[in-house]
Amino acid sequence: KAGVTQTPRYLIKTRGQQVTLSCSPISGHRSVSWYQQTPGQGLQFLFEYFSETQRNKGNFPGRFSGRQFSNSRSEMNVSTLELGDSALYLCASSRSVNYGYTFGSGTRLTVV
Amino acid sequence: GENVEQHPSTLSVQEGDSAVIKCTYSDSASNYFPWYKQELGKRPQLIIDIRSNVGEKKDQRIAVTLNKTAKHFSLHITETQPEDSAVYFCAASIDLAGGGNKLTFGTGTQLKVEL
Image (cartoon, rainbow over all chains, first blue to last red; front, side, top):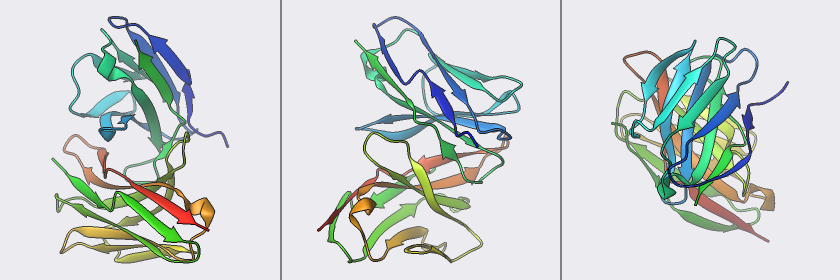
């Protein structure tokens, strides 16, 4: 069965721009979480969606937002990009709470 | 909030030796502890997980132990092979008031298995 699919794989943006990243979870998985991975900060939790509702949010500024659609696909948006937003953004899906989160390959965002 | 500490940050072993990575967590309400392996340029992959009602779990050469009293858990890899070389992350998960949960990750251990 297909894994977690993230698009695009790579993205280069300029400071001040906004960006939208997409995540398609494994079929049947209703929970989608987003993480930011950087060499200095490791894996940081951004937010989690379940049945189109954001259930939990990490300690990121309001420039980071997301949503989930009725087919469980999720998007993450970052507005007014800063250099420090350069990172690998990972999406993970799970069929239920505390059950085998599967990560996608990520979107590598570079802000110049 | 939850805090997960992971040690060591780098670990070098000879092929065939065992490797142990240790993590401690701060929130006693954490109830799910997965371990992920991330090879260079690839996504983190779940290799084993344990729930708070279990003290030990084994899967072939990999085992995880959990000590709830001390709030620490460990990953044990026996008979290490070069393909075990990767960064390993521990994580702790807590059920949140709004439903769902979130994973708090350790800072990672770079394991190198030398021939």
